Image (cartoon, rainbow, N blue to C red; front, side):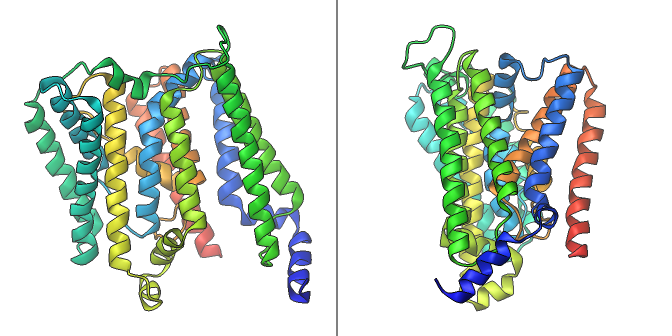
Amino acid sequence: MDTGITENLGAARRQPFGSALKANFRDYGMLLSLLAIMLFFQVVTDGTLLKPLNLTNLVLQNSYIVIMALGMLLVIVAGHIDLSVGSVVGFIGGLAAVMMVRYGIHFVPTTTVCLIVGGLIGAAQGYWVAFFRVPSFIVTLAGMLVFKGLTLALLGGMSVGPFPATFQKLSSGFIPDVFGGETFNYTSLFLGVATAAAIVYFSLRSRANQQLHGVETPPVGLFVFKNALLCAIVLFFCYLLATYRGLPNVLVIMFLLIALYAFVTNRTTIGRRIYALGGNEKAAKLSGIRTERLTFLTFVNMGVLAALAGLIFAARLNTATPKAGIGFELDVIAACFIGGASASGGVGTVIGAIIGAFVMGVMNNGMSILGVGIDLQQVIKGLVLLAAVFLDVYYKNKA
């Protein structure tokens, strides 16, 4: 082995545990914060939070936020923002209701059309941001107002529903147990074990690649702790759901999307270029990256994911309403910032955004169980968001 690489590997192994923990504060700090919040609400709700039925509701209530957080993360990393996602959710839900309920169109072509329309909405907004250099805040604020109005016009100011039973399964269905369990869903537990094994495999593979190229890695103890904690959470979560009705269909969709976006951001050229774009747009452009096209694609991607979230939300409510999606953009943006994304762009991870989404979700769920008023809930969520952004700015200035 090359002497330089050997020295780098040795330096990585000798990295102190404390400094490694501080260097990876964004990853470990938010995960531990989520666990602390869950433990707090588990105690104060007398064990209600982690009951299988409530966990299932927690997944269903936050599925569309998690899905949109994946798209919003890329937009924020690229140095932009999208305030229109909540309105797009409502508009797409209304479009799906009109097509399926009023005109009787099958849910498969309806879903396809809705996803295409979502992509076109993202493209329309991304075009102004990328090629005309109009600030994304202004463009998407205009989009928020436009699609709120279009939703009212599309639905005629009324709720439209119910949806066909097959479409409702998108949000309310569960993975069947192929092993024939009656009171326990063995398939869900098996999928949990497979997921934990995949986490360990890909983590070991990533660490080996980093060491091969002389990249500094966290100490073995910290690496083992993080992966053991993640695997324990996954297995415990799947076990609890298996005792109820198993894994919801939407959870499988979420997992596949999380895996896909984690791969794109960590392992592909386009993912690295998005981070370069957000870190320094001028330098990225000088290095040959087509920054306009990249910005355009991040908004197209956001539009498609907002459309998917709109379909899932409509399927869960079993109706489309003119007020659907109001305030969703705030929860999605907050999830990304709480999960460690930087307000100035160039920083953020998929896992961080997911953790941030569940921090918001657990807080909403726990406070609702405790009977905390919606007014106080909003105050607490705002303070948590402010604290997250403050920590980001503080550590950035300190670096």
